[in-house]
Amino acid sequence: MESKKAVPNLTSKLRADIVETPAVIRDASGINLFGKRIKSIIYTMDVAVIANCNADAVLAVYPWTPNTKILQAISTVSNVPILAGIGGGLTKGLRSATIGFFAEENGAQAVVLNAPTPLETVISVGKVVDVPIIYTVVNKSINIKDRIDAGVKAFNVAGGKETAELVRWLREELAEIAPNFPIIASGGKSDEQIKKTIAAGANAITFTAYGVTEATFQKKMEKYRHEH
Image (cartoon, rainbow, N blue to C red):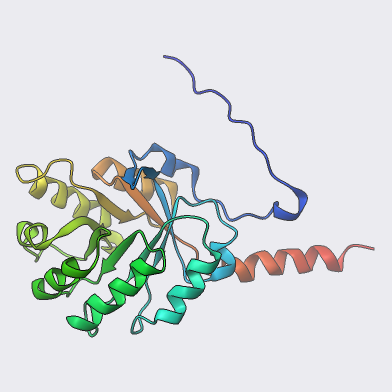
């Protein structure tokens, strides 16, 4: 079997601390989003991390009502496609559609709806945005075909410890409907979990960047303290 070719690395002294996504994510097939292949997706709202990471895309979702100013801030610093959260739970209907329209206008290349989003909201969003609608799946209680018929173009699986199993179930459900339907999934905290999720059928993996800014700054400050 032909071995993989070595990839030369170009960087600089000032950008040596770039946040790197786990290398194992490269084993995923990826999803083509407007001609760009997406494999690794960093899940963070930290603009400093977004500006200093090697992920293929950014998953910009958070537990508060979607705010257009927050999206504007992310779009200012991001060098990669943004998958923007537009609600779907407490924020739904016309408001989600309006935020979706704003997200697209500000450069988002996909919009993400939360797990409890009703079909009516999916349809409303589909009427005003041209970018793909991604629907978040957290358990096996949803009707997959209904979501696809309403306009969902990809699923984002966030099942905690059960993510790999949920991806496997989803892939089985899609086998007769749309076997090549795009699935994004959270990778967990280890390479082993990421491998299991990819093997279950995920095309792209989200990588959580909790505390990266603080940890990197702490490391640098410790280094500075010992320099003379």
